[in-house]
Each structure stands twice: as structure tokens, then as C-alpha cells.
Image 1 (tube, rainbow, N blue to C red):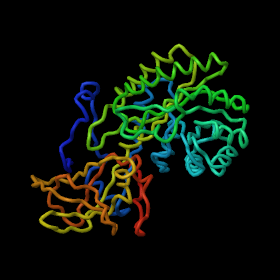
Image 2 (cartoon, helix red, strand yellow):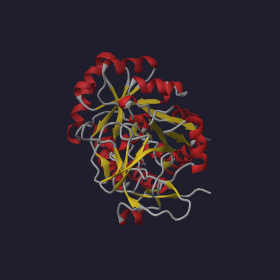
Image 3 (tube, rainbow, N blue to C red):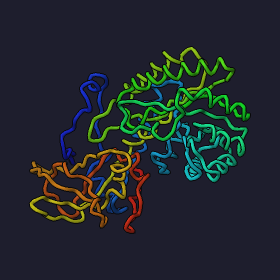
Image 4 (tube, helix red, strand yellow):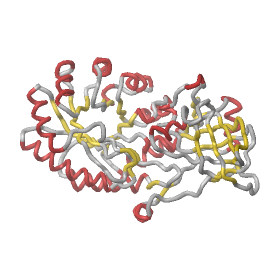
Length: 399
């Protein structure tokens, strides 16, 4: 039997979240025996996908938010295993580019199950998606509305609103989203251009740890919705975005408790309206469905500190440490009581900044030994690059 241990103590983000939810921690979706078998067949590094975990998470969200259509955010992970599995479960998909459109089509999605959410589109992004049959798009300013009016005037639009949330890791309104106080002016201008604005969208930010942030945003959006309705806008769709959290080196709220709080907020703010409710979860659906298997390829003792070099790093699957501000737990195999030491774990490239960890306690690892890294399903392989001519990790599904 193989066992897994954290390289550092697991911690809760705050005592408040502990009281609010039943927390969940990062868990691998395979053991070391299977990891050895898979790397013998496919090599390493290897991103191992559990379709069953993906399906379980998807339906946990659906059950906690009945009636809310889930548009999986393809940008979090456009892997074919992920997209095709969710397509088979009846999910919808959120795309931001022609490339994501092609990946979604290849996985079986049809354009009527897609929403294009990029607020600032090039012609080469907008037109191919429109020509393929996508008819729902997002915008957040008058210039973007004018572009759409010139190129694809018969589409349905959602106006993205800027929303801030104190518990989110990344503020996704820092770059996109119309200020609430300017929203009515933008709506009126879009109507003058002959465009059909059918609703609002917002995003509280990535890796949001407190679902009450959604409830607060919903109250403000409802006030704006009422004002727009008074001006004659026939609104029919509300998109609450993504941001649902996943556990990494910190625990995260359970899917059911987090989503149930959002559902209650939806009922309080919009329950009296017969409108379509949608969400764009990416990380929250896919993160826990993938575990990285990586191998120690070298070791050294530098100024009294053990250094371990592995075959994946910041330019590969650990890119989430750079672009997504996440920190992944490194799990080692325990065969007896292995003494732990402070150490540095570095990636395979020639770049000195390619360091995966400086603060996790690990045993004396041997060259060839495997490490498991759970919760690698979101913003990991999706943002990896073949820097230094090194290949990115392959993916393989196990169930």
C-alpha cells in the first residue's frame, strides 16, 4: 500500500472559512503503484486525468445550484479528456478564442452550447466563432459594441460588469468589466447601434474563498437590472462567472457548501424572475481531477541544503505558480518513517528562477523517485510552454 504525505502542514485560510464550510484538502487521484505503471508506459512528467472525479465534481455543483447551467471555462484546461467528458454529461462551454472553439467542437460541443466571454475580441477571434454558429458574446464598453455592430450585429450580448471581492486570489475586474455607474450609458449606446443586450455577466475573481462575495455582487447587479428594465431592456440571462475555489496547499470550502450559499443568494436577489441563470466554473470543476506525476532527475547539496531537480517546472505544469498564484503540495511515497528535511525543488530548465518549492519538507529523495502533485487540473498544463526545447507533460485518462 502506498501512502501520501504533505511536504508541509496543511492549513486553513481562515478560521471563518472553517466555520462556514466542510473543508476539502488536495488529494491525489492515483497511488504510487499506478503512477509507476503509467510512467513506465507513457513516460514522465505525466498529467493523469480522472474522468470520474471530474464527473462527480460537475454533478456536485449542479445539485447544489439546481437550474443553473454550467458553462465550463475552457481556458482553465482545454484538454480533450476534460472537454469530451463534460460534453458527455450535458455541460455547456465558455470559450474565449477560435482555438478554444476548435477544441470544444472536437470534443463534441455544438455552437448552441457555447458562450464567447472574451470582452475584447480581434476580428480573427470574433468572425470565425460567429461563422461557426456561436451567437452569444460578451462586451464591456462602447468601442467593443461598435466593433460587434459592424461585424456581427445580430448576436446576443451580455454586458460584463466590474465586481470586486476581497476573498479572491486574483481580481479579474482589474482588466475587464464595465463600472456599475457607467453600465446604463453603455446599454443605451449599444441599443442605439441596433444591438441586442440580453443580460449581464460578472466575475468576482479567481479562487474566491468566500461565497458571500457572490451574494453581495448579486444584490448590486439586481439594482442595475431593475434600472435597465425600467429603460425598456428585455433582459433574460444572468451570468455569475466563475471563481469557484480548489484546494492546494490550503484547504478550500466543499463544493456543495460553497455553491449552496451562492444558490441561496441567487434566490434572494433573482428568485422572482423567470430568467436563465448560468455560471462559468473552470478551476472549480477540473482542478481536482488531475494529478501530476513527476520524477526526480537529479540532486545536489548546495551550501548545506539538499536540492532536488524534477522533470517538470515553472515553464511546464507548475506554470500556475507564476500566472495563477497557486502553490502545489508535493507528495512523496512513505515506506516507513522517513526523516524530513528543508530542501529546494527545482524544475528541469536552465533558468535559475525555475524553482518549484523552497519551503516544503521532504525526505532524502533518490534519483528516479516519483512525486505526486494533486490539483493540477486547472491553469497548469493549459499555460505550460516548451521552453528550452523541453516537452510539456502528456495527459492520460485512467477511468
